[in-house]
Image 1 (cartoon, one colour):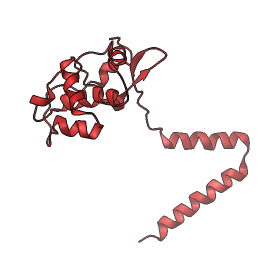
Image 2: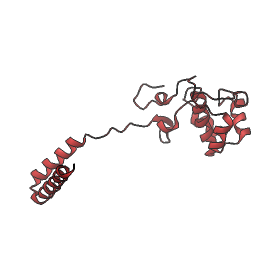
Image 3: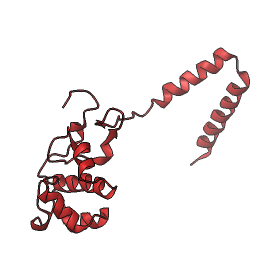
Image 4: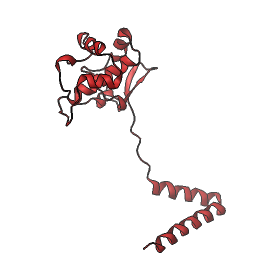
Length: 158
């Protein structure tokens, strides 16, 4: 794996953490719409590291692994495509699917970027400055009236 900021290994769920209400492999398969035989075949073919049939309760990593690989299968990935897609990822494939995506042009998985919340106060201050520089007195007066109305409503509350 590379050390870049979009390295999918950062989306791995560490193994062994027990869940408060652990699901069974059958429950996860039902939620995914994954055929039970297909889940067993995923283990037999080495795509899933644990045997769903002999694992009564899944830990967090096992559930994540079954959801990740199972979702690819239910999306229509046949064995050859599954092999191509999973090439380059570490086994077991316990990747949080909501944290990574497949970059088709680069033919590799990437970590989804984390979007930081903007600092609303500085965004507002920048907007006011741009209105001032543009000489938009009408918009500034409208903002002033809105701020005044908000302050007045706060003063009348008990």
